[in-house]
Length: 285
Length: 285
Image (tube, rainbow over all chains, first blue to last red; front, side):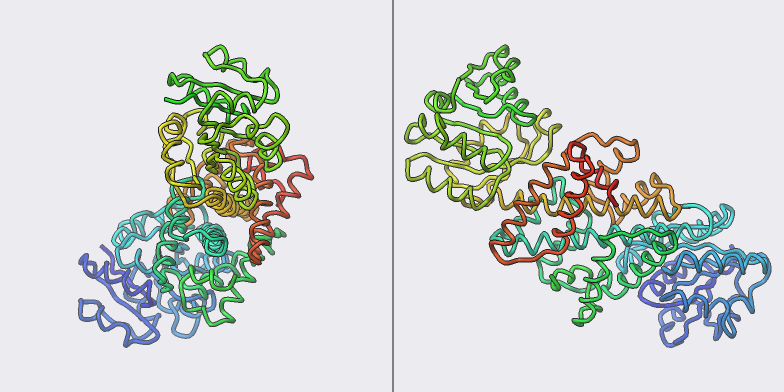
């Protein structure tokens, strides 16, 4: 199997690449802060000092960084992937970034003979650690199939959505719907508490019926325990909602729930809750 | 077993009482429009011409009518239940009405020696027909236990929430959370369609992950088939959301998602969508 490169050893990328190393794949890594690669090197990965060097050594390069500028930097910036990538290599972006920018990146790489798949992930840090992420992939079918045998080590579900950018669009849709479910959780708990119900009763009773959701279930249980730690951070969810708004503006769509969500996420960040989990949104109502 | 009375043979009450008759219980019915009792009389129920007559014949009287004034009318109005109810009888209200009015009704009946349980239901017309409704009960434990052997014929889950009014409060919470999930469904589908995803793909992909919900699953499937028929009618959901707002005002709580929901439900009704199912809310975005 071809050598696999991974750029971006953050909260998601770090555990993802560990699965590849443990599975015995030939892995090289690159991170802007090399110190974060300690456990990966001890487990047998090779460290590259630039993205260009990583791309020069690997036919398949995965990346997982924070936002659109970070992806553009690691691909096209100084000593970026594009400087080392051979014709026929494939770059897979697991970050959540702009669908429009993604289409442009894919096209620029195509002109250089380099394949690109946008492959944002869902499942949070626990999904990354357990290797059960959902991957929403946009790009050519052949490229997605080339990713599949590698991704199975950190993903239980890789779905090919459509052409370049469609993975990111699906992730946008996911973040919009999940965000509105967070709002439902926040208002439901607040109402229960203020109106004189026990929130634990509301959580148990409503979860089994028409008001049930993944988020009501999981993050509701955390809220009940007073656990505001991040499965998914408020500041990251807000970043993703800004991508949704950008896409809405592109197609001339106004969504009032999205508008309200963005106001509430802003408020949460203003109050210093940005590093907490989504369930902390209940604190701003 | 004591004779059971049922007042209100609408879309919910009609099938609920049929389960009791088929199970062999001794059942009397009352409906403002007696013609709706046809199938119940053929199946063996007795028809009463007033609510007072119904209460005079039955120790346990269930009712399921449209709103707070309708409950007050059938209980305290001319020839109402209170005129016939013997001391020690029990009235159970399966309607969805005001929690505050419910507490007052329960107290007035208590002073007359008549028990009261607020027992709003969830599960829609299909739940009523299949006998799988969820019942959220408020009142004294002994009264709820007296209801239980009867309710099991139309309910798969009867939960005692707390004292009088708490069943209605839980139902309010349910309608608030479910309403925000309807908003999530509406915005998610609208975004998918406008941004260039296939809504069927979005429905399938997101339903399995963090954006999944009962409503995304069930009503999303109906939306995909263009089926806007009511599981739950927009005009009824709006009525329930007004009860939620009333409770919020009582305790001085402002919920921005609830406010937005009410605006959207109003808009849907203005556009003539009130008789359609909740999933038609997507048409007003």
